[in-house]
Amino acid sequence: MESKNELKCVAVKLIAQDSYIETHIIEPTEVKGRSDMILWGKRNDYPCYLSELYGDVTTLRSIVNGVIDYVAGDAVTLSIELPVGPGMANEAQTVFDLIQNLSKQLAMYGGFALQVIRTKDGGIHSLYCLDLKNIRTNKDNSVFWYAEKWDGRKEKAKEYPKFIPGAKDQPTGIVYVKRATDTGVYPAPLWAASTKAAEIERCTDIYHLNAINSGFEGSAVINFNNGVPDEDTRKKVEKEVNEKFGGYQNAGRMVISWNDAVTNKTTIDPFKTEDFGAKYESLAKWSRQQLFTAFRANPNLFGIGTENTGFNQEEYESAFKLFNRTTIKPFQTLITDAFVKIFGAAVLTIKPYSLETSGEAVVQ
Image (cartoon, rainbow, N blue to C red; front, side, top):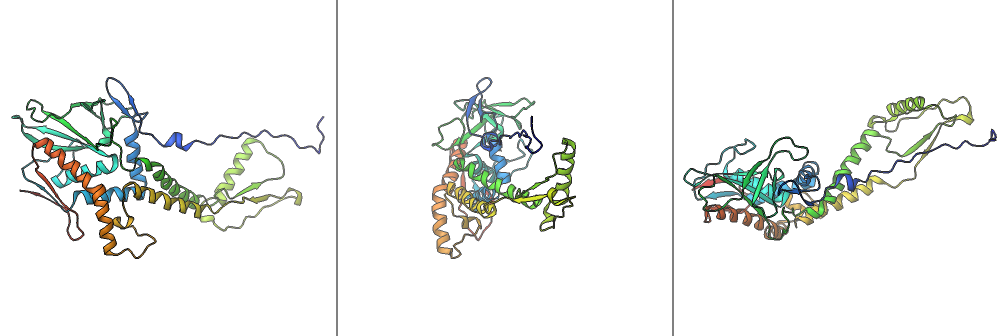
């Protein structure tokens, strides 16, 4: 029989930590779906995941937006008249807008899709840049499906054929562009190998937000040493403690404990932890560098200063030449080559980016 001096054994349930990599990070797998469609991601959601990272990660968004400006250049010259009206998203587009949208698709997804609308006599009426996250295709990229939602979607996807030059009986078609090094059905962005780095920056921001908002930060455990009450009482006490001492307003607040005896005093045991703030800041710097490395870019090219404050005009020009040669020009070539495929001639010219002028479209 258990004596009064013996401690009662209390069952403790440990909850397994959620595997963030398995539940949050989406891989670019290609799986055959219904009919001939190839799913982009296990749940057909990989490009949506990339879009979410673009929306949440400051460094990535800055790089992508910078690439858009660099690729579109200072002026776009189109040697023919081309009506560019509202696309599927019902957004009015100028020629310069069109090139910027194509640049964004290349920076975010590694490719783009152009919808070509023909006139009744088989000429080219207009071009629309489609958001690549809404596009799915088959194995040989000969058929395309467009839908604004693919995850649990109810709408029926619109089907379009591959654009065929000179096919006057084809009212519309899709020009699908990806880099020659992309051997899969779908393209891969330059930063495909850096999605985990983007996740680190996103999680670091969430950590700091929670640290400011909670105040407690899991830095101590409060022990109530006068017995274990029932579940409802425990929940009530926990709620009151969180409401009283949680939140960024409570930093440095005195904790007062009322006890009926010294033996029943409340104890607060601090955790012996590392300086997580400094550790996470180091990770944030590493993740930012990984993203810039993926684009072969220097942060100073995007207005983001580095610890090297001596970055001068000569160094800027040298960094830009490398970035322009390895990233910008290949993107511009993919765009201009797409126009050659559509019109059968070089009709598009992009004036290189400079600091002195702003972007504009010119139709001669």
